[in-house]
Image (cartoon, rainbow, N blue to C red; front, side, top):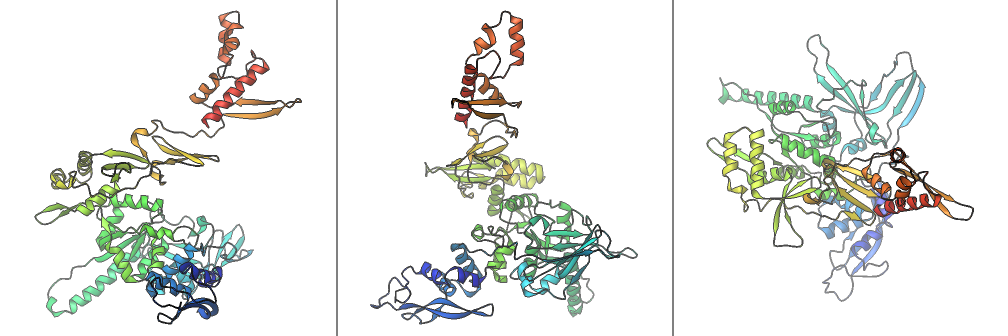
Length: 627
């Protein structure tokens, strides 16, 4: 969250913000703020006034428009006024201002640290033992770290506690880590199975340090290794909510005289939401909806889990992150579970920066900007499913929006050629590879997919007979903007069958198709038909030698690395091959023996020093030219 005080300090107490909005503004002079100002005399001026920021008074610049409503407005209010933003959009406004002035409240490894103590372990503190003391309630600042909308009720509902301190004992030494105002520590009881008869409950604890500068140490579990890899966070709480919901509904049902003699049937919860992490889940819970989430963003969501969730819930939503990994995994979930509705956060969110200085990407980031429940409900309205057919009691039909979404997830789109604006192409995008396709190709793909995955004759007939898969019906597919520029002033990208390879002066970086996310694409017919393999060993090493006369010689050592290209470079540089390999020998046996031991050699003993130098220069020129 942006520190308003720091924002004012970074912008000359708001003066730079005002000049950004009104370049004509000058201290000590009247000026106009409206372009069509009929007043002959400028009527706006700048003044400094004291405002309260987190209970502390600071003096900031503001503007009074005497030709308008004569109200003094501070820089943030002015920005909101000019941009037509409501008070509920205050945080969004501060983020936009911060973005313009490159102000970012990031994790500071000097400030965001816990208080650490170390001592000899007590007798009861065995190796790998962890003990902690929880607070009765989390502070408002701690809740804000989890999300702007998170309150104690949501915190409690998912089993979270704020920690005063926690110990860790290893090899006879105990480390005590204390939370601070700038470094909160949280813990969550994760129940695997309730106590049953004489069997105790199965559980583990998840320890969370959200402001740990080392991302790899933000999460720990206790006991070590005690958590199942396939544990579904929030599923236990979802079941409990289902029980409580039906207990309440049953009570209401039985209290209604109209239901006398009738049997109550359990009802499903309306909604559950798949989130991408702890903080997203808390934000979701703060809006009144039960979340579930996996141990990691890339953990596989199994069908048995979805089947179990569907026993308790009518509709499942998924809200993935909108970074490269989140988009990739979100698409996988949408295509594996067609009934799940995906909520894609707007790409404009990436304009803002999170507390680590990186582009915002997740639900928590979005809800910091849009904290109202009405905003969240509006977001859910935009959810879409990849199930492209709708079955009624007596009919079946294609849902056009869902069909186009399904095809989009599978890489199909339209493309407008910049050199021929009249022509719109149907394309298939697979990572970096772009192929032009035709309606018949899409119909064939859908037919194969239905046969392999749906096994429903009605759906297959629907695909075969639908006019929505004609050329006219497919014109409205989502348009894809493509850039086929594969170079920058300092780099070049090469596209192979298996990877795209970015090459610059410092590195050769291959990227797999499924991980490819840069803006450069390539038409399928221009891909290099070869599987790329990066050979990390140097092909050769070169040593520069300067003689007493100042003459520069280069000595080269060819390393034994299998490469046809290297063989070509070497042998095509052997200008004196006939003398070296043939004319100096008296018989074939000697020639053959020499050739066998000097197959790739630029400095054979049959050459003079000058001839060796010529070979080396020729070789190095080729290498330099190729790059």
